[in-house]
Amino acid sequence: MVHVFKYKEYNYIYDSGSGSLHECDGDTFNYLANKLGQPVDISYLSREKIDEIEGDLNALKEQGLLFKEETCARPAKSDEVKALCIHICHDCNLRCRYCFADEGAYHSEREFMSEQTAKRAIDFLIENSGKRKVLEVDFFGGEPLMCLQTIKNVVYYAKEKAAAVGKKFLFTTTTNALLLNDEAIEFFNEEMENVVLSLDGRPEVHDAIRKTVSGKGSFEYVIGNIKKFVASRGDKHYYVRGTYTAKNLDFANDVLFLADNGFDSISMEPVVTDIPDLAIKEEHLPAILKEYERLCDEYLARYERGEGFNFFHFNVDLEGGPCLSKRVSACGAGNEYYSVAPNGDIYPCHQFVGDKSFLMGNVYDGRIDGEIRHTFADNCLFTREKCGECFAKYICSGGCSANNYHFEGDMNKPYGVTCEMMKKRIECGMHVLASKKRLNQKN
Image 1 (cartoon, rainbow, N blue to C red):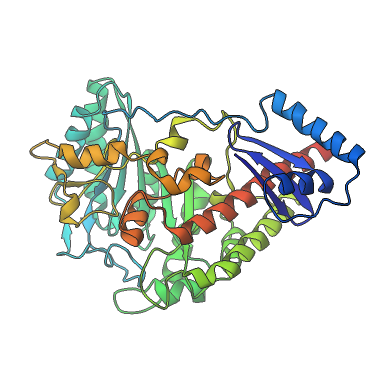
Image 2 (image 1 turned 60 degrees about the horizontal axis):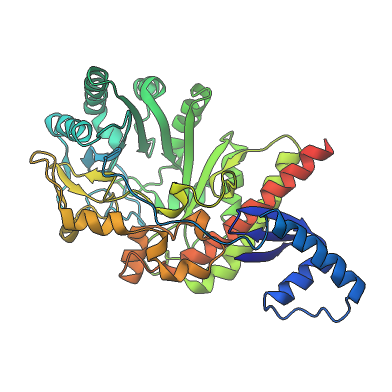
């Protein structure tokens, strides 16, 4: 399908069949928008101009760059497990109001994973990884740094076991940074492929939600730790990840605050919650969509000044065409990727942990529920009928299965509020691609 959209004075054409993005003049935009059924007046166009426009569009079509037939096939998913999210503890030293994990407890008892269980999870991954050479483990919580020594021991164990069978592990972790001391920083820089650090932005925004057990705001405790870590990180991967809610719909200010504090890899995610005063609702969408544009404008202004940073949601990759496996298969949750609870129970992903209807097995018995696994293996872009006529489908893959399930009751029914935000972010990301190309050519 063909999608035409405007970003300020710029006119764009995106062809989902080829994955091609084109910039065009206003006459071409209006003509094509009209032909696509939009209420755009083209009566002012002369026959000569229309012939010129049609000639240009037909040339692109002949090159396979416009109106290209969508030929992406249903993906054949591997039955080899590639990654685990190890819940090293179900406890936390913060009490964030919006936490989907029930402030770290996952609606159950607060508990820590034993080193034995964590090592058994590593064994389970190796045993079920087939011919995969590179395996991934994410240490998650709760707050993983409450179990730093266990993580260390498990990482060293995993590296030794992997070397013995010709495999390699990549480790990541997500932390609130409250316990991010020199020991943890040194270990993370040695062993962690990526580290995600939670910081919601401006002090007043962060402290309104991310409170300590005693009820105090946590900003002053974590900002210094995160700065120290990032300064030591070199060229290794990290993200400072924030969450915005209905309380800070001006979240662009929080992204820019993080950039101003020296963080050049930033993500700012919409909250996933049903808490009335925090939840993102349909009524908030007009303000949110405008805010993404405001952020996009400042993002590009800083890039032009040589002060650019990496904002996760403006990263749109159009290389390789639309049919890459990662673009049609949805995520690997419940099939190639699992979460392991502290007692060894296996779930499709971290957002399903604790829901017994999605309990798939346990690392000690090594068996996986075939029916649940088949459900997730079968799940992909083409099982999400609503996505069929959406221009963004080969980029977003139909959204998060867990969010779809929790908000719509069905993994194959994309959550509409998230869809609208995703489409706007993709348009902004396409504008970023085109703008950077223009600036690079100019320079």
